[in-house]
Length: 214
Image 1 (cartoon, rainbow, N blue to C red):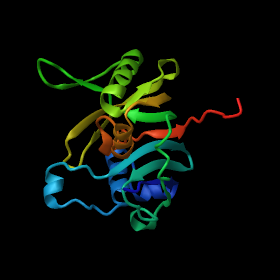
Image 2 (image 1 turned 90 degrees about the vertical axis):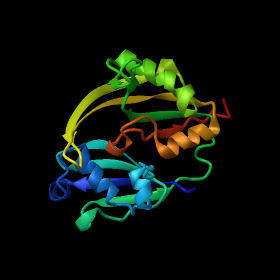
Image 3 (image 1 turned 135 degrees about the horizontal axis):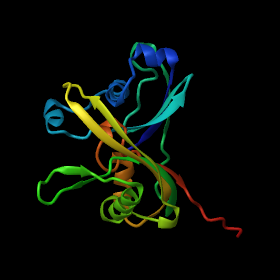
Image 4 (image 1 turned 30 degrees about the vertical axis):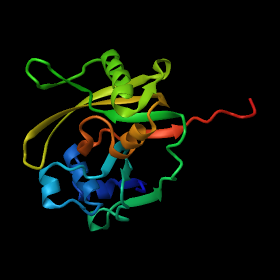
């Protein structure tokens, strides 16, 4: 399966025209770039969309969103707004042993008594949660000396059905060592953790290659 990495660039006019004001409206724009390949049963059964995105924020002039999917997007958002630049991920990109990474995650734990999902609060607790989940679920081990939780945001918005949604987003970066290649590939392609429809889970990785001349 080929993966396509893209960047969606929205200027001020595009943001206004597309009514991008919160995570759901951005979700709508991103998903509108791709054909939905799921059938009705897949949608009803919450089959993964094959689409990941990460909002890089922006400034007075515009906004930048990273995209990763198992198919190419359109060149522009609905109405011809914005600009999309894409490239196919090289087949050997995920063959390295170590990577520098950034990711936005939705850190949660399920309460053993109530079975409810509860947010993980505080930077130290998020770092511990992330380091714990890496080997168990995502196929990589974290270098704790280089693990950094940059910030934690709590977003509140309404979804398509006008239900209130509260989403914690932790911005994490550091270095990882791959310990299970197939699981790591799946984590990269499918995203990690919850909240992936609203901008969480996209692993942004850069290989760390040892210098052969040192």
